[in-house]
Length: 300
Image (cartoon, rainbow, N blue to C red; front, side, top):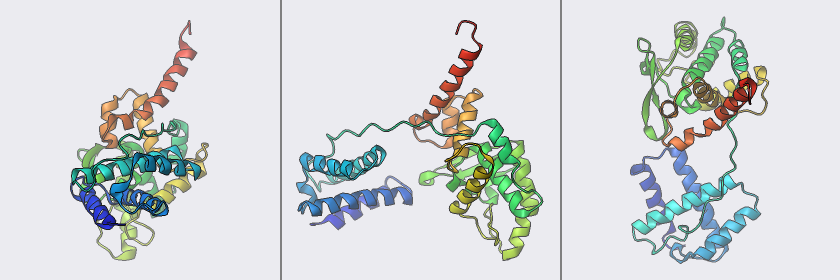
């Protein structure tokens, strides 16, 4: 296809430099665009400039026929709309065939979270007499106390933690930074782990890494490693089934709103760029308020 590599590379460079998107997000855009380009080859369309609205409709029909979810289709449309918007700006094409396409309505699912009783069981699961048990406890307490992402937890270094003010500098998506506070339980768990467990783990590798959480070999614990730890602990203790390690973040947000925190504060703590992303948790809290009302109001 004519100039497709040049167009795509320019677009990906734009996402990285101008939009400051994360590597993961850029890879998603690249995959979505490559998928569409493969479709064009199958249809015998040689130029990106020749794509029409009719071609896009055929592409969407193909996606539905292959059984893609509404969420996946919406993401592909959004990626390709951005791709053509960029090419239009750079005068690589004359029109954006995706501009008239509406995104399929997403399937709204309330985020799963742990009830307070389940959280308490989770905090009793680790063996605090071992270095790994102290590490796991610190991970759980910190993630529940702050609502940070698993990937953000893996990036924490010792200098990021301010114990006097009980705040941590978090390195979030798109290289955005934010400070989040943590409570007394997380503080105690972190101090115990850093003074005891982490020191022992560090001796295994003879390393001087500043990464907060270490694996059993004394090296930095990866995002995947933290996911496996949380997943194992949740499966062993929680009554709720089929939930992901991301549930601690959902639990943090839900419990904060249930206790009266305002939406803007929770948005800032979670590092959400848009308030609409945080609003998904209000569906859960509304259900709780309705239950309380129905159970306690004399004329409910």
